[in-house]
Image (cartoon, rainbow, N blue to C red):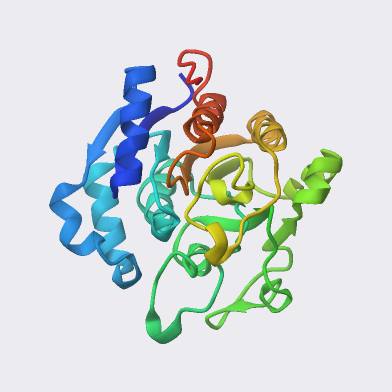
Amino acid sequence: MNFTPMTLELDDYAAKVGEYFEKKSGKVARKNTDKWQSILKSPSTLLPEDVKEIVRAEVPQGKNLVMYGHGSYHHFTYGLCAEIADKQSKEYAYVHIDNHHDTYHEHEGMFNCGSFVRRLLTETNVKSVRYIGSAPPVDFVDFSIDGTLLKPGAIKSVSTGKVTESVKSLEALLEGTPDDVYLTIDLDVMPQRYVTTSAGKAWGVGMMDPKTLMKTVDFIKEKKNIIGADILGYTGGSNGTGLGVYSKLAGRLVGEEIRLTC
């Protein structure tokens, strides 16, 4: 099996994902986080050490596909990189499929779902960041993150449109990156008609269709060694298809042994 699938059930949405996959395959590890709820109730006040502590306690070392819920918890990807991926590889690329770049400055030291990517290049073994479906602001590219000067090409992006047009854009995007890759997928890269996500009208959703997303994941899996991955953003069904799209995407990563289909 390529990945060990598990749900990190930080909220009720992640619990629904866990219930669905458990019913469909019976081969998903469900990590209940009830004992952490006192600090999980306000994601925007979580500190990096809080996130790493929960990951250390709940996520086993190894090649995991971690599925969780609301996008407000996307900074748990930082913990997954710092505590799990860093143990798997001394140098890896971070591929961020999302409608948002999550590279905003930390206001008054606030670490959250919109700022965590900045820390990856300075506090983990991530050597380059590659965005698919969104683009970072121009002044973040080949610039500095909190005073640390980045190497040219450390951050690059490709729009949803270019991904749809040709794999050449993906080849160019990944060129020069380490063979090892950590992959994060926020489902808000897709329109709401495919899956209801936490972005909704508040943050804005992308226009990538599921077929393009699947092909993109297939391409990365073929060209690179994915050492870990996570999927998040689910906050309910959309025309009854939400968890079906989620499961097909997870099945793409997990492999043939577990067919997670609706």
